[in-house]
Figure 1 (cartoon, rainbow, N blue to C red):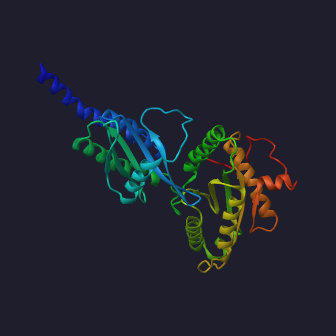
Figure 2: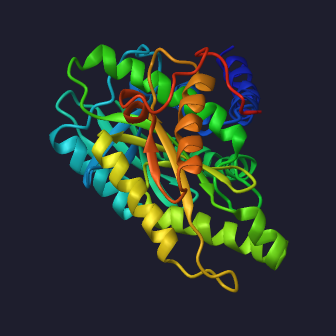
Figure 3: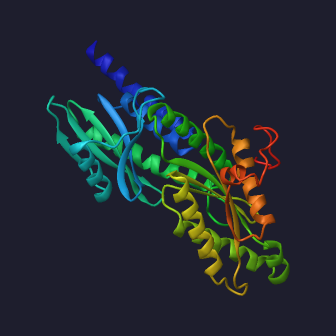
Length: 344
């Protein structure tokens, strides 16, 4: 009888593994993939808690945030840096790229596994269990390798073919993430001093570049422009190519003054850079705060109004929607839901 039960249980293991893999590969973005990973592993290994942490830099300070929990901690669970020894253990795991473990006061063991992304180790998977085993390590290691491989496929599907910046499809998800984060931060923090910003960047007279030098040199300008974006903006900012000579940046967790300074620094860098054959070009930029009570189309429309003003008043400048509005230099859009920009 016991032998029959053991045989039946063993026969279910491959099915459970296959079902887990199917669920994992159904996901189409990194956040959903991470959440599925931490929800799937408890079905395969003994654990009391599984959390995926990610390394982030804000104002040159290192933070380790929980980005996915096993179970459902609720939508308003704050993203807080890890305290004390947890922070040090996670940071060590991420920096070294090696697995480590520590014994907790309640007799459980917390094991830290490095999580690999496109550019190396970007996070740490923390698993608490009463009796960790070599079999657990093998299962976790296999799923983390699958996670890393599938992350590469998702990465390729979210990138612009020419510049490798995020594409419009990725923007659709990221702008919603930024709005939701703004809403949750507003609930948790009464005096919010930093914000997310949507910034539209448009290369001035780019059609003239194509007409004069040809599309091959035009593409080279776009490639170099994208590289300069990556070098100038922070790792936690989100960069997109919106099509043609239009680019987009979501600046995260900074003040209005810092946003203006970052965009001005990039504008000046573009103006000073000498592009092969083409020489010097300039860029016009319009930006606005991402507000929790606005639709994505309305936020884009505000940034586009600021960009249009910059284009119409000399180009090669940075303009903020709220500043222009306060000065009476522009009018608010007719409808928060309306926009002349074709998004998707």
